[in-house]
Image (cartoon, rainbow, N blue to C red; front, side):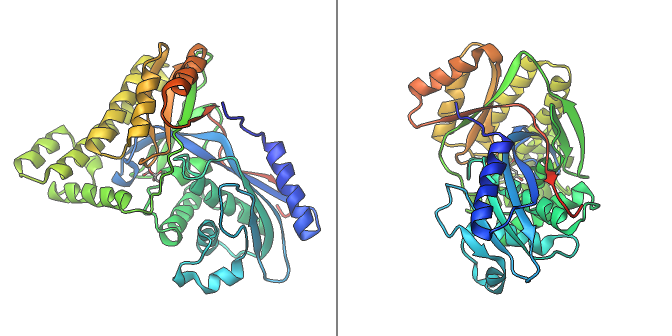
Length: 393
Ligand code: GLA
């Protein structure tokens, strides 16, 4: 099982590098989490429901204000092989010509979409969220950057929803991923011991208590990297919009089972029917799952997770053999309620709801039989973004 480094250790490491690089102590410290989506996949950009929880895996930024109008930022992420130290001002000049390194696009995008004026800074980023693992490392970086700018500028009065939307715009315009709102929203709004039922139609949410002595959330990273900038994610989005438009609806949120029949009668391309079928059924499953969680009905919750997985595999076609293998291996073990792919797909992680006493059996079963090399995290629902220290607030 992977060790989740605690906040103090991460902050300590980042501060040490800051001191060596910039010859002073970093006074601002902020953190923003990654997330795991329990259920409600590919529903956010269809105005549907999602049910994620924030993770104890976090991105931390430490730093200070500078007076010279020059911003410099360093990442300590081991997964990044590109340039790890960048001058934001140099990058700004070449925005249109696809600035490298890629990770800096997220920071630039948030600076460009920040609501308010921002001063220059020096900062160091450190993260325990695995990159490209489907746990929203990009949203964690965006939200950490936004939170850092708040701490830097002494501002903190923008609505959480608007922060999430600004971070989503950064991802659309600077990273080229036409994502929904789920990842940024949960990274801003997550709360300890709860999952968040987000209604993506009107961007509101309800906290669903999720504490139990009985069950654990086991995340298994297939270590197959996913890239949402490829054509698959935008293609899925377009197929959903096409289905909604053929049904003369604003979005698939307004559609139901009968509309799938309607698409069949209209002789629509089978792929479009399958995409619509997934989204319509997944939106329904998500509200049912929220109800099951509220009632601590983990058996029901697990069944819905399994249905969700097969719908994503067969109708939405965003799984891959490694992820399917991980789900099957988890489901072989007694004490597992449910298991499914989580996040955008094409690799990344599975999420498994399992009795606490059976966690090690799942890990061993996967360890023995999985063809790749998996990494495991047992995570409790954690807090959203926070300013840990800020002299200007
Ligand atoms: C990615 C996107 C989210 C959402 C999921 C799929 O994580 O960033 O907005 O669409 O995929 O549920």
